[in-house]
Every structure is written in C-alpha cells, then in structure tokens.
Length: 206
Image (tube, rainbow, N blue to C red; front, top):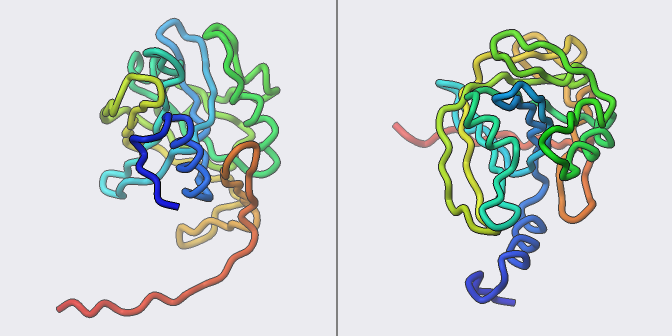
C-alpha cells in the first residue's frame, strides 16, 4: 500500500503515524497557569534533543479550530514546566490526566496524585514519579495552528531528580526498577521489560 498523506484527512494520517512510530515515551507534563492553577497532562510525541545544554522537546497538538492545549498556554505564560516520567504503577493515574477537562480543574487532585514543590522552577511535580526533569522554555515552534497541527515545545532541563530506587552509580538508570511504559496506538501501551544488547561497531572515521 502506497499512501500520499495529502490525499487523506488528517485524522487518518494521525492513525498511521501513531501506529507506525512505536513505542513512544510519554512526557507527563506539569505546568501552572498565570493565575496559579496547576495542570497535568501526558504527551507521547516526546524525545531528547541534546545534552549541552540538556534539551528536550514534546509536541502538543491542536484539538479543534485554533484550540491549543492548556499546557501550551501555561508554558507560554510562565516559561516553566516539569516532565514527569510514567512507570507502570502510575499508568492508570496518567490516563486519568489525559481527560479533556476545563482549565480550572486540577488534574493532580482528579487523579489522586501529590503535588510536590520543585527545586528550581515554580511548577509542582508529581511526587509519585520516580524521575522528573524541571524545564525552562527555550522556544515554541508552531508547525500549524489548524486542526491536526501542532507545536514543538523545546525546553532546557535545569534540574533532574531520580529516585534512589532507579539511580545507579555512574549515572545509569535501572530500567527493571523504573518499569517504564511506552505509548502505542488507540488504547494500547507497552511495558519496557524485555531487553537485549547489541554491541556498537567502532568508528571508522579518522
């Protein structure tokens, strides 16, 4: 099957994208509005950019006609946010925070999660999360503000927290303990618990 994306409605292209690009890590982003209302929402278009400075990117989409998510509004207003990482034990709570809710609703409370003060930024983090990155906004790049469009939210990581249960000497993460989950398509997720190693070949440059 050969498909030209321009020939399909964006919802159908979306299905093909999320069904092919798997598994995807989840950025569980906590933010705060200019009025001080906390927000918590998951995003599975998420990855690292570089380590100097430590930079990450996640991509909130456009739901309806010029309908940007509360997370994006909050980050533009305050310039700060936290990326909390999702373990299997937190998957159900994360799913609750994916519900589209009015801006005044506190997703921490709705999901039974604990708001904890962060070290550097003014935005709270999820106390139950084993890893979280405190971020300051670098820039927002809008690809399209139309339905099906999206934005790249690029942030600089200014503080990292690792629970002692997952952190190992030498700056390694114990994935067996972390029990990370990945996003697939539709209602499906996957567990990160089946590992194999492939030794990287040496460089043949200079």
